[in-house]
Image (tube, rainbow, N blue to C red; front, side, top):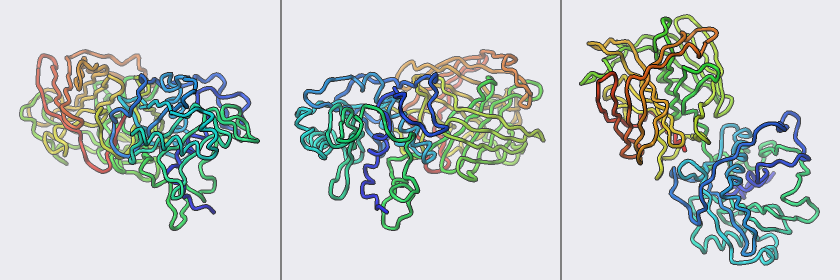
Length: 497
């Protein structure tokens, strides 16, 4: 039994045990049930232009920074700007999600894309190769001398050079401390295949078989990779749909072990209806359940908007449960007024790369606005209405849950959608507002062709910082503007990139 002294850079094990690029040699041996489809399209991650420095972080906190490093005489294959390193990072993070399950590296990103730094070393490939087992150490030493290493980050280095010792290396504290894990893209360890050739072992690799070494090992006195701050916990925050039933969906906010879900769908008469489950508690890994309510309240245009209260404005209509198989797929089961159904749902991805959401951390220099936004951060001011925002690329998909026009505080719920809120300036997004009608929530089958959309106005979101902004709208001739803030109800909160 080995105490995992290399824990601080076990990152090297994970990214080093997967192919560096999207192409997979046909002669690799895959375990039964894990064979890649020969016709499946390969995911290629979009890439930023080359940078010789670490850009501003999208999120704060410990994270894994990617680097492309060459010896002085190395051939520049531009794997940092072609998307090949980003694709590799996506591959090993998906593998880690499957192995843990639900945990993945907090990869350093800039404006939603992997932040990859480029550096050319001062020594030749032959000079570094001559250091034998210490190629990684020499790489880290020079990167530190160049001021490129921060002690609050780990570095996954794709080294475009060779080694006659191994295919990669990591720190081995306390004897060999460090923050860099390196994969030697052209390594040729003796008695083994080339590092850029076929793999003789069975794929996919397994993470700490038997859990007796470095991951969830329960060895007293030994550090555990499972407790690493460089690993994020999966968050289910975002907009979820059923792929073949366009026209309805559920927005999920995830904080701590509790989900806040708003389900936008249709009543038995086809009119828009939204239901809310504000405390969907975790019952086991990937499973959540809570009470489902329907509310009434003041008209969307009421000024002042008097907060709704429980139980006066709430009607219990049933229950809502989620069971997630991974970060992007699951099932939604519900009972509404005696009708029980289960539907498969998927995270809605409408822009290249979508978003990656994890529990923990804070927004960085380029915030992502995907969250539940209310009139105030604690939800006590103008309680009863809010806006769910999905943020991918430069587009917001916003769902506003509020109430129909009318006097008093018992108006029926109404939801409006801005499905294409384009970025018009830094922190400013605008688009058309629509209302919809469609088949009842319990319709079988649910025919998306029966959904009708009516443009009723426009909406503009202007964010003053990562957590505050202004929501301005015109609906059927009524123009108003209200401050909004990210709603915080538990800890840790979700951070999306």
